[in-house]
Every structure is written in structure tokens, then in C-alpha cells.
Length: 237
Image 1 (tube, rainbow, N blue to C red):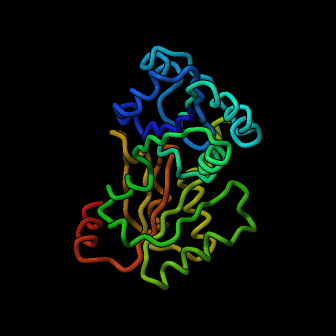
Image 2 (image 1 turned 90 degrees about the horizontal axis):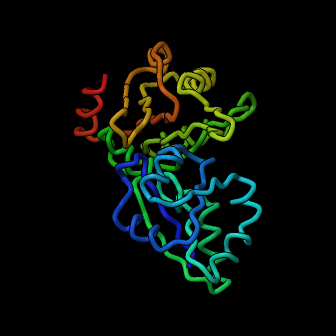
């Protein structure tokens, strides 16, 4: 059986369901290139099992290796956040079913529900976008933001990251990108959502850019606000 197991956004997010599933597994792969969370040593101590780091090359280009192992043994792919947020992992769901390999999904906290810490309603978010590292000539995120604003919807903006090379697009770099494209709006800058280190600030982009933020951040541009959402954002100024 193949297990796709979400680890959440913090070590304390790891569920009983996840722990029970991990106990059954002969081998644990940790996909670590789309997000960060508990260190591998912490995980190995918690599970009392060896954890094998799985880079992008293995997860995306050699899925058959892992799927073949899962034909005769219980194998887990551990994913920070929720395991089915990235399309890469949905690919495993599809390919496992096509190969008649049993698969079990263990869901967990992700950025897509942690954003409600801001006081904004999840129902009022439009399409999510992301800002890549090399964004000088990239305008797709701007179009998504403007389209969402036309529909009075909020926009979650994810920031590019490359944990394998310790490289992260910072909140300040993302703000610079928005300002360059004439989007100096009131917005939220968030880091470490879903953890006890969470930081959320709500101001104009040109004011937020003067502050210092940790890595692992995101931006949220509010659309039309319900009066309770307005009240929540006023408390974050």
C-alpha cells in the first residue's frame, strides 16, 4: 500500500492517523522541496524509523520506483502541509489506482486553511497565484489578482521557494514586485502561518516593505470585505 501522509505546518500538527499509518510502513520518503517543517532528525526520533529524503527528481521523474515498492510493501510519502495540495501528489493518487495499488491519504493542516487566521473567510477567496523567483517579465500573478478583485474576491499569493538550495522568495521581494506593477494596495503579509511563530501584518504594500519578515511567507490581497472581516483586519494594523 502507498500512503500519502500530510505532516501539517508544525511538528505538533502530526495526527494520530499519521502516526498509526507510519508505524505500518517499511519505508518513509520525505518530500521536502515544496515546503519546510520538522527537521528529518526530529521526524526520525518521533517515528523511531529512518526517513529517506526525496528530492524533486525522485518524486516527479521516478514515481514508478516508489509505486513499484508499494506493490508489495507499505510505503509512505511524507509531505509538509497537506499531501494533495500539489498536483505532483495527485499524480500518485491517479497512477496508484491505475496500477491497482492500494492508496491511503492522510490529510493535514495546510496554508489553505491556515490563512483563516487572518480573519478572512475561506469562502471569499478566488484563484490562488504565486510569484516565482525570476519574475521580471512575469505578469500572470497580476492578472489573477486583478481578476479576483473584479469579482470582489480575496487573493492568496504564494511565494516561490527552493528548500533544497536554501532559497526563498522573501515577502519584501514579493512586495517590490507588486509595487512595480502598480499594486500598492492594503494587503496582508504573513509568515509561518499555522505555527506559534506566525506573524500577520495588514498595511499598504509600501509600508509593509519597510518591515522585516521571516522566510516561508505569503501575501493576501483582500477583495470586498464583510464587516466582520473588516473588523478582523483593523486589529492587524
